[in-house]
Image: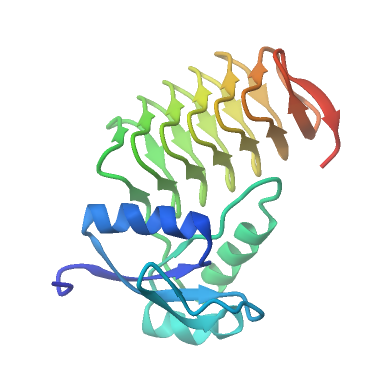
Amino acid sequence: MTKDKTPVLLLGGGGHCASVIDVIENNQTHHIVGIIEAHDSNSTGLLGYPVIGTDDQLEQLLKQTPCCIITVGQLKSALVREMLYKHVKQFGGQLPTLVSNSSRVASSATLAEGVVVLHQCFINHFVEIGCNTIINNHALVEHGAMIGDFCHISTGSIINGDVEIGHKCLIGSGAVVIQGLTICDEVVIGAGSVVVKDIHESGVYVGNPAKWVKSL
């Protein structure tokens, strides 16, 4: 039955899209109308959901189904997710906040539009998460942490209390950010790294303790 579910488009048909589909199917709050792919994609569908259009048709598709979720993944760069977000807003689309039923979000936490929280995450009290950010499976975001727009908090990572993370950052799988630290915009923290001091320069940081290794 779909009559009580919100119709939704998925923008991007790769691996992250598959993860989001699993959350949607588990939550039973949205009905997937179809997937929107890049104009040069050869994909015809994913997990039984068809590709019904391409990016250059987005404006018209949003007139028919205004609710959408950006399901392009984010590794080193937030550029594609940010571009799609701006297009959706320009064309009057709506970006719901999607939280897996298996995750826990404290009542005082604030999640902006387009945030996706995947399975078995915990987001504690007074956390603020910016628009179009991914909180991936098994991530922990502790009390008072602030995460900017267009970030990806990867699988199993730990953001401790009162941490401030800027915009367009990636915290890699299993990485740990020690409590009270500040990370500036456009920083990538490598998988398994441990951040033990503030980061004021954009770039890629790896290791324990995490150290700058290269520019983005």
